[in-house]
Structures are given as C-alpha cells and as structure tokens.
Image 1 (cartoon, helix red, strand yellow):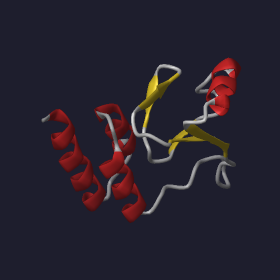
Image 2 (cartoon, one colour):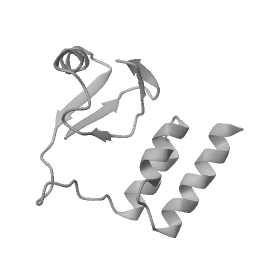
Image 3 (cartoon, helix red, strand yellow):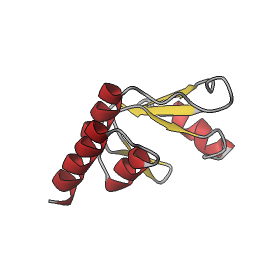
Image 4 (spheres, one colour):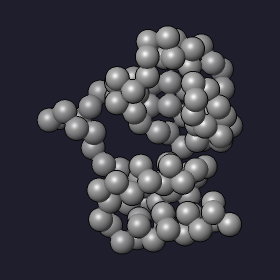
Amino acid sequence: MIRITAKTAGFRRCGLAHPAAPTEYQDDHFTKDQLVEMEAEPELLVERVAAAAGGSQAKPNAAETIKLAQAASSVEELDKLAEGEERKTVLDAIAARRKELEA
C-alpha cells in the first residue's frame, strides 16, 4: 500500500488533487516515475505501508473514517470512502460532506 498525505489540501501532482487526510492506494496505482516524482515533492508525504494480514488493509474505525470524510476535498474521495461502507454514522458524515462539496 502507498499512503499519501498532502501538506496543503488539494495539492495537485500526478493528475490528482491530494487531500490533507492520509489516502491509501494499491501498490500498482502509480507508475514508478510517478512515485519518484511524488516522493521528491516536499508538499507530499508518501509512505509505503504493509497490508494487514490476509493481504487486505484494515478498515479505519468509524471516528477516523468520519474525519477522513470531513477532510475530503472531492466527491471522488467520498465515493472511495463510501465503497463497502455500512456504518450509518460514517455514511451520514459522507452524505453531509457531499452536500457541502456540491453546494
């Protein structure tokens, strides 16, 4: 897994607006050249993190996921957070942030 955190929310690099909240991507999401570019960028913190046992990343607890939703800078980020999400409090936070972004 690759975890990217922007020092400034919405900072753009490699075709993405990176949020200030840590966002995780599969190892094959970026090319080697893109990773080199982002790792050299002082506005981004790029971390390589191990996947949880069984090959899947552990799901953040509800409070952490709500914070990620509140910090999301795009509807696409919210869509990613909503994938497979079943916790009502988290879904409510995602819906509220979506309203703010679409206003």
